[in-house]
Length: 316
Image (cartoon, rainbow, N blue to C red; front, side, top):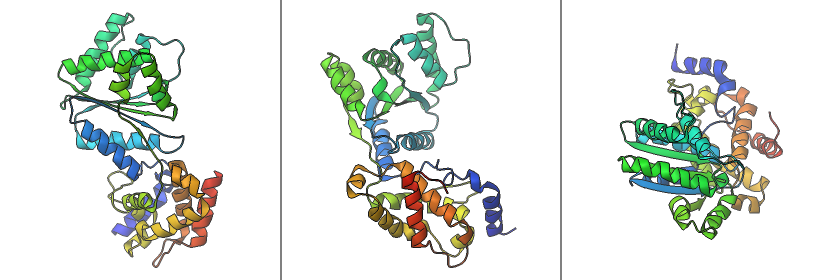
């Protein structure tokens, strides 16, 4: 079986599961790359925290997935805790500690007493820090974290630092996260504001062709599906065309030009949500599925239809 035969067989078998088609690909944007770079620079410190806020659907979840993968790749052996804060009028330290234990799939029976939970968390995180002796706390929906919860998280982190464990905290939240920073200061907890949100940045969606170029390049060169196949996303989706030189970077101008004519300039300045970008790319690929051949070119009318469907929330 030739390489192209293998690619065609994989395409036939796994098309409906491909991350582009399912709109679940953790595709990089310049905003994602910038966020990862900032977290990694911060990770050199013994203890550090950074926060990002974004409007809905801009791509926080994509960024968190990409950040988690980057940590695994760049700091092997580091421990990662993925937490999501929820609104809870009955906050309790025990619940926060329980969430931490659950996030690392803690197997032993969890103590009922608060002192016991504290001890379990301290020991569990010490082990979870791994050979790298480094813990990453990644918290989504951080605007829901109360002052009390910030205080409890601070205590957990301080204990790890005292034991020689590096800790890096990345908070992700919605626009309300900016208000939380101000509320913390107004409530006299400047220590918490400085610790957790002294570095608060906006996370934006795609705003220029340069953002789309990064995504297309990743599809062409820095991606793989199925795992272990050595097939990039572009090669999997259009194997015959790929073997003849087709690359998504070649059509990036067409794709972005269609976006600029189909999306209001004011919306683009805010950043095109990654949900729209993902749907747009999925629609292009689905509409062109049967066009995979030598001399393949993405028709402009197909691109226009793909964008209109994405903006309308329709599926192909």
